Length: 195
Image 1 (cartoon, rainbow, N blue to C red):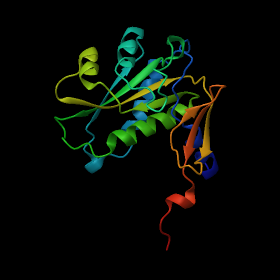
Image 2: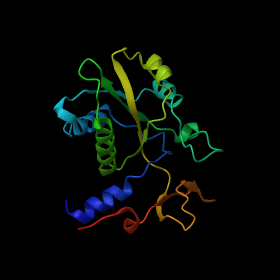
Image 3: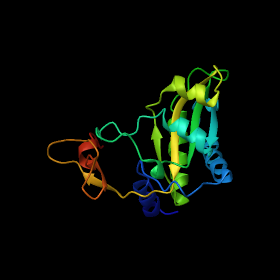
Image 4: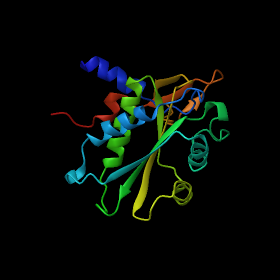
């Protein structure tokens, strides 16, 4: 893969919150995505992460109810049923292995999402989780700490990256055509030194 195609992949890897729920994802694909994450970097190579993969409609509804869907979209409580994810990967830290998960879960989630994009899928990484309810719904042991949830499916929304406006407002928004806009700071505004 050349640098321009990787750049395109990263730009296509936006947080998708609306999916075609009729498009199902095979368990083998979810396992392939976890396999990608398993091969990623791990602080001190402790590899303390565990995963729950879910394609079951009832369990998916339970997971859905535990997630905060879009804080900046105040009038939107999440996708309607036909646009909900058809699969989830829950990333857990195993306290029997370590109490410090460093940034392993972020690396794993990003790896999963990039892999999903190469398969024509989209996803969204959630840190806003009702942990107590999620652990109850999925019967997750006390030694396991939910760190992130990755929602997956076939995207049905258009997402655009915009340059951050003069007002400096970083909040994502949707226009009248339901196009999701994500303002990004300019490169020159974030590089503060170059020698």
